[in-house]
Length: 168
Image 1 (cartoon, rainbow, N blue to C red):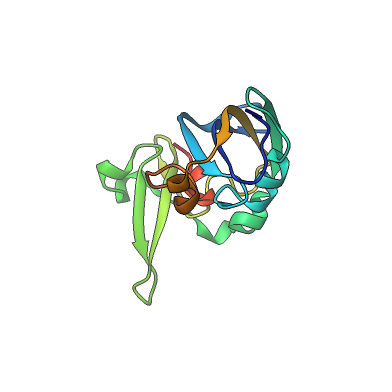
Image 2 (cartoon, one colour):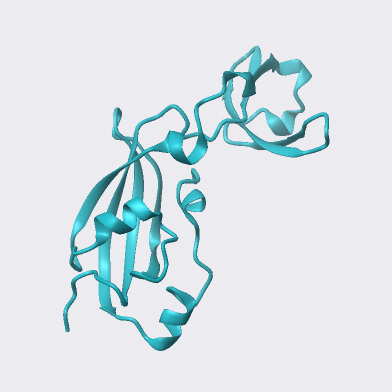
């Protein structure tokens, strides 16, 4: 059996999203993501193109254009307030805060900094303004079953590119 990635092959991989400047890992998964090559492009067309022709056991790095996915960093989405004005449950880095605009549309923000005097809340995706790369390890390549072909990958629900790049 050929374990080269090509159309109609079922592929499982794990990945990390890495800051190119610092080498810090923003997110990683250890539970494999599975897809059928040529049927499902949930990982994004650029990533799928890079996987074409690779083999089981390969580890590849792919530069990701974060601006293309999330847009440019918008400093108007960064708010700094006095810590005394912020409820205690929102005074921890990493806490998600849902706010509404004047039309009532919800937007998710993240507490990114807390010090003795202030709390910083940011509505930008944490990857905005950064240069990142995907490090993918190909764990399995085999012929896809009919059921996998129909589903496009694993029989369970698959994440999309935005879910993959979400900071954990």
